[in-house]
Length: 519
Image 1 (cartoon, rainbow, N blue to C red):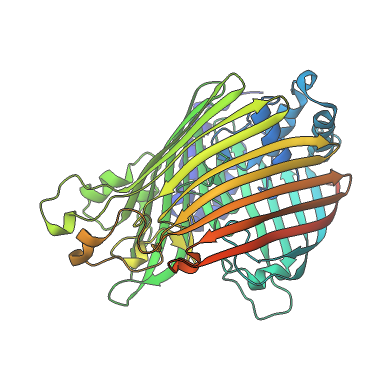
Image 2 (cartoon, one colour; image 1 turned 90 degrees about the vertical axis):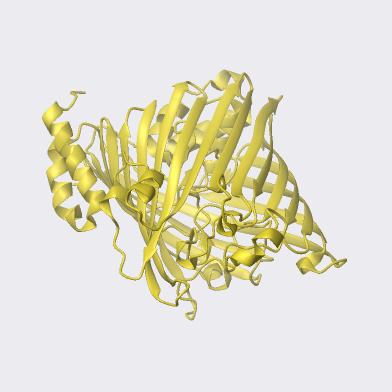
């Protein structure tokens, strides 16, 4: 593969930067970059792909290398390469069958034929006790639902075009979904994007669920808690050292004066892999908001540090800093996350004395025979993700861009085992302690800083969850379910109240795909 010349690479970087600063340049920029590309396109494997839980099991098992450490979703071509190189000798027969099935589904029939197109179709029926996707904090009415859709992709040299419209009657009852709900069938586009790749980078525009950080837990800054939203993305560097950026315009919100503010989300990350199995991500996130605000180019600049820009230009922005880490030690893996939202160093005035706002995770994964065991502890402080200006809250349509809840701590132990052909078992035990703090609530006044707890505001609700997940895939058919019992103390944040709930769901799905060279 011939590397691009310095002049062509320079032109590509200029175009990609222009995409981030001015989305109106998208059409012309894509035309200009075609000559600069040196790599064929590959679509992303959506987080909701049927094979994702199996892939995560194989990675944790050490059978395949993680194609994208601290980053999800996977890239399809990377998954195919990793599975083709899998150490199947150490796997059980059922696990080897999973490797073959995912390879058969994702591998192109004739990779030398270009350009290429594929259409995936699916239909599913579900029954659940709740409508929210998160069973730990189940919400929304439960009933039978039906879903279906068509995902189309076209690969044109270095360019990937993907769209995935679908309908799902569950959306009408999901408290985290803020789309149109007054029709018999609710629907949306799960993925819709243009992705351009070259040897040392990627330019992306569209909607796609992402997660920055250890895949065992939700990211503290860029996660799939909200439904996928349109954003600009840029990656520059090698596989071992990359600069990454994600930029989005969020929904408008009123500030403290009642004026409607335009809002923008910017996230930058430096991702470093010093050796195979070890990765470190250093990131920052900003929410910029104002009644007449536009996205300033100094925040879009991937080489800028937003916190320094905030002080240098004396502009208002909510800045967050963080780090993610993971490393393999034989059959085990250690992982961690840290978010610093508002840590006060100078306390010269009462306005500088608010409680610390932060998030953290510590966890480990190990393998015992064929079983993957994962345990982690995570905490998000009371005031994390919110500021005195409600327009700068780290959320989109009242759903967190990172975590969807604050003022809680959680300890979880989960296992995974491929117990038979296409059968994945995942028992789970979780302890959740949830205070009454919520990033959607107003920020406390200065006079209340001294009485505002760093964590666990009000009456703390405690939930013990004992549950199990199961998935079965055979050919075009899939059956998955998750069910458990929640033992709740101080239910509804009422002192002394107790409740016991059964929370469960089951889905039967049928899928198909056709693919081939475009004329």
